[in-house]
Image 1 (cartoon, rainbow over the protein chains, first blue to last red):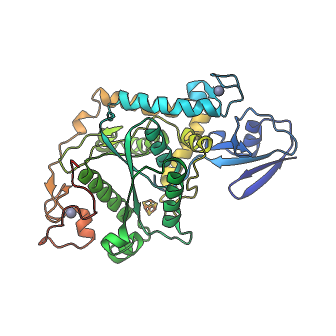
Image 2: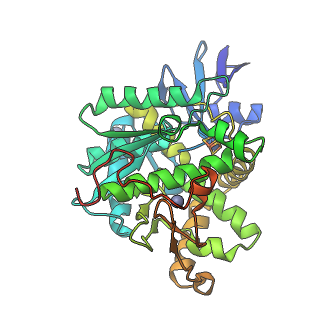
Image 3: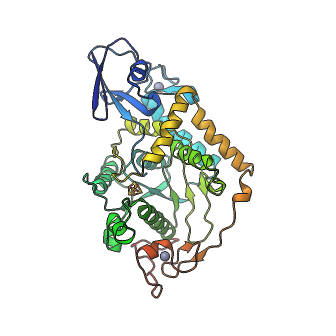
Length: 65
Length: 322
Ligand code: SF4
Ligand SMILES: [Zn+2]
Ligand SMILES: [Zn+2]
């Protein structure tokens, strides 16, 4: 299985689909997150492999700049 | 997806630019674009002294980094607001800035103004003492504006802020939905100094999506403060940003053209009539420009008497021209 981690939540999805498809399935707007694997940015067309742990970084943060 | 420059695996895909880049080429592309917009909007030249308002967030730290990489004379200013909120927010933000400097730019100069040390109370304390509002945001905002302007004017700086396109588009949407033409007339990548004691203000990131700035920070290895200020008025702005992102998902480039077409219309004078000239007075205590005679809102909230004048250089900065 593949782990998707966003804020303090973790989801499990099946390998073989793209990150974009996984995000849509979970109801997360792909425009609002940046997917990373081991702190490296990857694009949403990446096909998830078994055992991947994808950390989603929220694009919007910070009350001030 | 492959990098357009080298064919390696892409780190980011920018559908609105039809451009995907790997980390290495992204780190080259961002400063090139920033430089392009600095020139396009005539923001500043290499001779100008820049003051970057840094909060410890991704936008301001990335902006400071990019300006220094481009060789600009850019100092930072950090305002210690004294916000704890159970997460030590202010201390943590300061810590991120210190770490950033140690890692990338140990020679860079940071002005720190601690509100409590300088004026006697933290922002939440001041807000409680004066307004008794649940949220300190209005008090906080006017303090930040006043102090940043003051540091900029005294140091002879142009004030540079990290507002990105999502920030600008969210404000634009709010103002458009209520047809606030006065606000629309003033929303611009460059705010000229309309008074000798007003700093010129510029926003070099105004054409970058928020996700592009987050991506820059990640690829560059900048550790930024991820959590919002515990008082974040957030709700409204966040709501509009979410809405705009949904629009963007279905129609790539929608956010960008919403903002750019607004700038074009503004440039062509669509909101000119609303740009009424405000008569400015100098505050009787601190001398900063204010729209009403007497004390400015900053001095009023700090209960300052009109009888004494604030010593110049109170913040320990060189006086303008230095
Ligand atoms: S959210 Fe409110 S209190 Fe927090 S930094 Fe922003 S304006 Fe200040
Ligand atoms: Zn490349
Ligand atoms: Zn004043």
